[in-house]
Length: 629
Image (cartoon, rainbow, N blue to C red; front, side, top):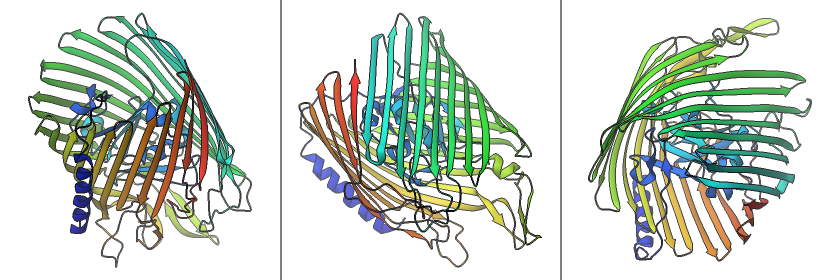
């Protein structure tokens, strides 16, 4: 990373410290600390987590109005995204500059990364039916196995807790592009039982997904309809023994463009995830967690008067044993099996199994905090992948903590990369190239190191993370020889270095938030003739600033985001310009049971794009009415 990045980072950090130093004497009730499970596979308070972790809670999700899950994630430090023309189209999320398929995404602990393409069906997940999102940055394959090169995103739909009375809620809203959204739900817990059920639907006329730079340009509006259903049921049949079932089913029917001379094009996407978990305290020091997970994706893309469908499923079985060695030390032994299956005969092989064993150790010794993990994944077709992680935090004072981590990750090739059948291309009746999968592919591998400094007071929170992630054996899914015979090959490697700065300050009823990301995402094997190559669609600089202020029942907010220039191609010849966005929010509680929320995105109506040829929405407003009892 260049020295100018370090100077900018230090300048930003200095200004944040100065801005908050004079306010640290402000008296305010300390915030309740969230409980997270993703960072170590066991419940922990956020302040006790070793590593770079954040949580998007229900209140934050409620304020996001018309925004998609990918857009919401991109407001978090260290995360960017791209869109292909609206919330109904394919999108990708970059965690610390790693690729869209290099972060593991879970729904209630069940993986949903596509086994055929590696993509995530973000468009089939509705924020309205989500309880919270936990984000772990940095390689985490030693905890969860394949795909966790850049981090883990765990979308959690259920609300746990002690006995609580039956409660119900509902939302109904309308906004720009004739966007209508509604959702409703109930939850409660009593006599050992807890339950929750929520449903949502949305419909929009949308905006034009493409512009004149796209070969698929069509001068129309691309709308969508969406719905989702989420539920959970749990029973504590005796102290220390708990059985729980969760279910999520999301659906999107969205338009996309395929040129002016074709029939209307649309795609149907469905994402499902189900879990059955038994948590049992076998002794005072031994907790057993048995879990069965099932996820399924389905896609139906229709254009040119024809249909292309795909379907795959994943079944996972895990037995996690949490052992308390002492009041300060815990160890978890994890045994897992993953079964991946594709439907139909598209690929030469339609099944793959992974058997895994892992250990996670956590120790807290006064001011010293240690976490270590080791895991072996045995995958059908190419044997074992061993990954490890080691993290250490030291409390300089009750408020200041310094830490360092090192971990490794890997991503197994997809079925499309390895098992796509041979296909011959013709031009004018003569062979003109071919494509086939490569069963000899190796997994992508990464080595991540990071250092961090954090301050957490009652009213002030500061953070700095410096990281480097080296990824080897990157898969080029379409590598061709001089005869245009193409296949997938391990030919690339990348080095991603970055600094993330965060700050948050409470001034009574006012909260200020700021973050700055400086990143150098480099392809270490640039295109011939180039001296360097910035990984595509990833900006080197992102700044975010937000403020919220409460006046009795009224809450006002403003957000600013600057994203630097990016490139849309490997050779860095197609530049996507930098842009600034301003958003405004407001909310008013009519009573404890009813309120209204307003979100105005892109107030200045900036024209920008996150992928060449695809539009982003202009200025748009959404008004939501909420009801709760």
